[in-house]
Amino acid sequence: MNSTTFKWAGLLTAASVFAAGAAIAEPDNNTLVIEGQEMVTDVAAPEGSPLSRVYSGWRFRSPETQAFEMDDFENPAFPAVELGEALWNTVEGEAGKSCATCHEDASETMKGVRASMPKWNEKRGKPHTLETQINACRTDNMKAEAWKWEAPNMLAMTAYVGLQSRGMPVNVQTDGPMQSWTDKGKELYYTRVGQLDMSCANCHEDNYGKMIRADHLSQGQINGFPTYRLKWGGLGSIHRRFSGCMKNIRATPYKRGSDEFIALELYLASRGAGLSVETPAVRN
Amino acid sequence: MRTILKLGLAGACLAGAAVATAHAGNVAPMDVKFTDDGVTQSLTGAAGDVAKGRAVFSNRKLGNCLACHVNAEQKEHSFHGEVGPPLDGVADRYSEAELRAIVINSKKALTDETIMPGFYSLDLGVRVNKKFTEKTILTAEQVEDVVAYLTTLKE
Image 1 (cartoon, chains in turn red, orange):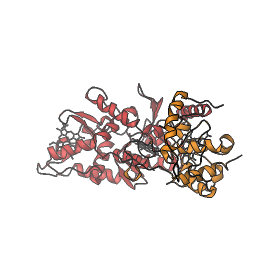
Image 2 (spheres, each protein chain N blue to C red):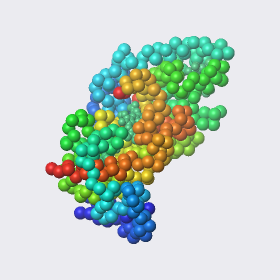
Image 3 (tube, helix red, strand yellow):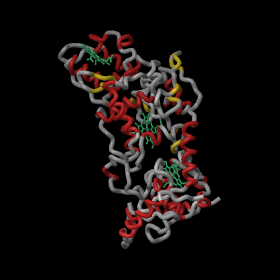
Image 4 (cartoon, rainbow over the protein chains, first blue to last red):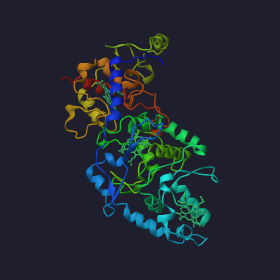
């Protein structure tokens, strides 16, 4: 370093005012009821969280976008959910089986699964995300080909399986073998990346509730994935969203399904503990 | 109102500053001299262009300052962010040299915790996209243009 480091006291004060401002910036007061079921979109933050309250991204969207999620007939993700249901019952692969052959009625056997993903898998020696679990069943149990992370069939199936947990509180394991993965995710969350030199926390922890140009910043929660984004004109995975945020700050994103994104997914799920699963959510 | 922090560091850095000799053309990012008064020297040796600076300010691929700052002087743009303070009258609060320091590297000029990018700094995050490695967000000319524009924001 070849320069004098200086800071202005007046500004440091201003900076702390902004930091405090983030804590009091409120999302709206709307209530999310889907098909008669009220969702938890605001809950006390889990122990050890830097946040005081945890808010669903739904609370930061415009009333028009919010409305899409409140009625399954309006929700543009539902054609994909129907595809997921059809795939559930489709025999594929050399073993001659469908998901339903082993798992029968998804509304019973898949209840709560999305809420607890990612989940430790002993055989794999690492956590399963919903995508890797589905592919493991396809390749090992059905002798069928794996789906690509962002393939329409994978999105349809994760939406269909995820829907069976709608309204249930996000609750992932973070201790035991998941501890080091949670820690890694946390480290990634606070690491500044890209030419713009920002961390996830700079936007989603320090500045949620504020407008960043035309976007209302949320806490970047993942309880609604896969999410139908109006901008995408379709469903997208959690890792696609991570990737988009990293690209916006001019960073090279990690690969979908990479250990880094799995760790980040786990850490974000733990930050959003207690929020209702909203799969498939709608965002702009 | 202003306190100078890290005096020890300032002394230690003087030797380094002397080594960074000014060469012909623009001041390189590594050679920018931060003083107690800000960055007093123009990066190009010339004054910036106010009209060009105004355009850099709103351009999403360049300054994109409107992403985070309200600026009443650019009412024609409909969305102004609120992550940072409004910049109305900012020239009443800061000198030209201070504004230059803030734009060049707000982490040095304001607080190292800031979300505001350093626009003429190579102190970047990890995993910088290949297209942008070893590149500053703005060129020396663009920084001077923005600074010239900021100095017109008086109330």
